[in-house]
Length: 272
Image (cartoon, rainbow, N blue to C red):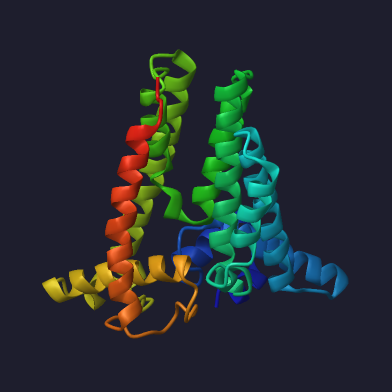
């Protein structure tokens, strides 16, 4: 459903027209560009393997994360152990080996790139071009999937606690990333609440959602379930499951415990 409509695309105008006709779902031009390039390669060679491309992107993301850990002077043994856990985690395999999951790993990979160049600028005081590259990677991340729309909030908090929010470069960088987030948040909010999206039968369309206390409880339990599966990879499938089973409730407990631990950790950090 995601790749088939792109076979008829030969220009940006074709892409926009297909999106307006609901042939292409979501606001994810970078994800769609990756699929389109994959199709062009297939036309030239007759070869295509979406899962292999996902795996390559995933490895690139892991390399980016390793660079971040290295920049933070994390011990090499600890670094490799963390990468081992992330790289082989059963839950994350859903995105890597699911063709439609490319948006997740693309966004994660680009965010790693964005965070790396930001931290490099902060730690090594490199030229402002590093912040420009960081903002560009962030733009590509949201163009793949809007899940990282809150990234600038973390950046702003970090700059504030480090006492460098008053620097001109830091202010411009934060404003640019906040603007990118605001634009994508606005576009996605309009899209998922639009008549156009409702006509696709999307499960997140407003006509399929009836707000209620029970729905709120389900949302909390779903988040708890995801957290449980990240920490304890039992029953790793995330597509279909019973919301009210025991891993969901355990996950809610883990949410509370994780939140308290995180707050205590923040208080112990020598920010000054």
